[in-house]
Length: 248
Ligand SMILES: NC(=O)c1ccc[n+]([C@@H]2O[C@H](COP(=O)([O-])OP(=O)(O)OC[C@H]3O[C@@H](n4cnc5c(N)ncnc54)[C@H](O)[C@@H]3O)[C@@H](O)[C@H]2O)c1
Image 1 (cartoon, rainbow, N blue to C red):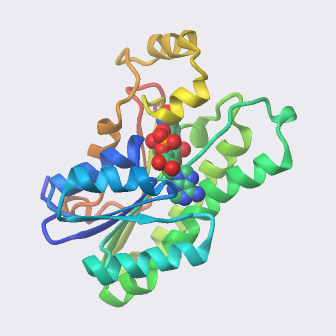
Image 2: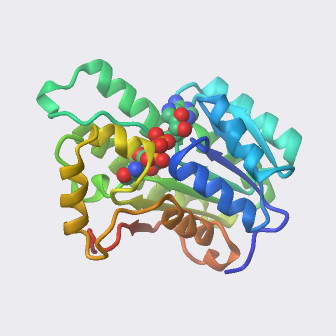
């Protein structure tokens, strides 16, 4: 894979879990990274792990003004954004009939409206420069469904449709738009959603052909590839990184 020397990346939800691994990997490939998270303490700790080429930014992806301010600060301190990674996400596992409208709104705001707002905030610059890579983290739940995650699955499927349309609209500006779908991945969110249910993790491991949960680094590798020049001719695609749990 060709490296990312001189590129600037903006990664949401990069304080912990998959986003943190993505930020570390993009930096390892040579990019400068804006580590953006609602939790500024974890954002600072990821940025500190990376060192001089990273900055920590507090952002709430559900708030367009916060997103615009964070993007402006990243561009002022690091330079024009070449790579956007829409990673911030959230879920609460429960049967749909037990879920409240407040939960629907929160799930849709973080997982669907958030990536839309972040994408909008970086696009004028990418279009003017005639280049850019946008990678959004959806979920296999958005491709094949997942019991207890109905609205989340809808939001994640929404990201796939949004990305395919943008890929078509933006190809003329040499902007690539792709989606990575994690399967069950060992992160703080997974631990929260599984609620300490070790039987669930064991059952998943048995169902996954590779026999283990995903690790954040597995996802980071796929994102680094799609963010690189090696993926210049790949757009509108949805890549599952799930150890074979889902295929096709
Ligand atoms: N872990 C899994 O099994 C799994 C499976 C499929 C998809 N995903 C997706 O992968 C992505 C990363 O998940 P993770 O497991 O690393 O989660 P995580 O909870 O461990 O990390 C998510 C990060 O997003 C941040 N965040 C939450 N709301 C935010 C907001 N409004 N604005 C900015 N930042 C916000 C959190 O502070 C946190 O640092 C999410 O989009 C998630 O839906 C995860």
